[in-house]
Length: 338
Image (cartoon, rainbow, N blue to C red; front, side, top):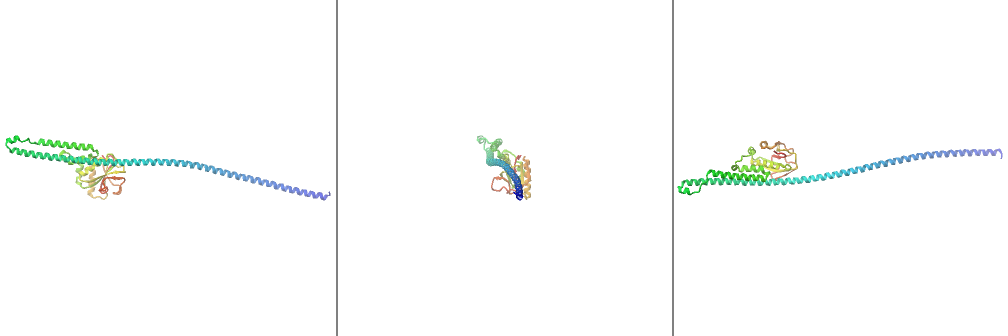
């Protein structure tokens, strides 16, 4: 082998070495790039996994909060249902109380009518007794006069005449019977006490000797005035006070009607209300009514109707004619009228 061939092989080996070095460098470079890409991909995957895990945790916490909210909503709905049931029970109780109040008012009105009828019968009996006593007195006087004109024999045979003392004693006994009947009527119907006493006293005054009520005496000069009496149904003592006031107004010649007012509360004493724009006579009558009620022991005050005269809250139970808004004077009987 000559020198030229050796040089040729040396050149080939050098080239092969260079090629192998280049291949090695390329391989190492590819390995480095591959390793770098692998790390970067792993980091991206871990980041996505952490993000997905965080989202899962957030969704789980939100679902737990939603479950708590749902439980709270169910509890609130149960509480509302209980409150609605309690409200319905209260409404039913209020309706029952209103029905009972209307029944009590109807019973009171019936008792008042019966007491008035008994008082009227007692007054008629007293008048009949007085007429009988007067007729007996006149007959006794005529018999006495006739006896005085007859001869002594006929005078001894005539029946003994009634003297003045006997007639007065009979009148007193009849008056006592009338008072006892009136007292029994008052005991049988307590709500009608004021009206029965007033009417019995006004009709049977000549027989029993009772005096006229000061309320009637002070209001008689306003006879013909119109008034509406509103009795609060929830107040136990209001019907009796309203009946007494209505009796005094009727005795004074006033035109009054009574209604039972339900669905309102918070009214104290007896409030006298005057319609806006009333004339001077009606205004004077309302002022005199307040003073007369105070004199009779009522907690009477004068006030103003807070709204339209034809509008009112609650419900009125009473006569249909006249209407409650026709009268220019209203008398509202509330808590503690006396």
